[in-house]
Image 1 (cartoon, helix red, strand yellow):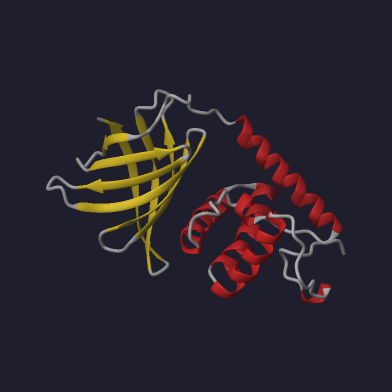
Image 2: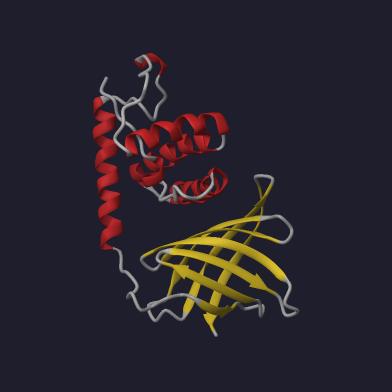
Length: 217
């Protein structure tokens, strides 16, 4: 069996500079989207994301995976290569599985490259307002977004982070009650409106959903 490593950071469109917990929440959101897809592609993606979630939800497994990921990222071989029967799924795949995964990742990357992108001048930095009157401050640094919201009395109500991919924003945040939000938002072509849906959870249990509409002030 050939050695084949699955880069879950690439597969799940994660940010290697963010915490394990943040990326786990992003994997959960991506998994929900994959499960909603029809056909073989959605089933393959959901299966791979399930394996990724098992790793990112377990500090010990994540530490092992991250060490191998760092080694491969910098081109340094592992100090000790485990026996084939001891290697996890992300390390060893059959020839056909590896070829299928490679094709899947290449198609995914091509689709991302062909996605419409905001013009460089269309920065999202500034003040936005949602339908409830909450003021939302967005700070954009390249494709990374830092988001915070305040109510009408100036009290903080939520904070979050987003990764801009074309006109899509992969968002993860937390409100003042400790609930966690994950979702995908989309920037209008004119750059003045952001819409989407957030799924809220607490202690890993879903507690609700919010439809988002932000308008630049």
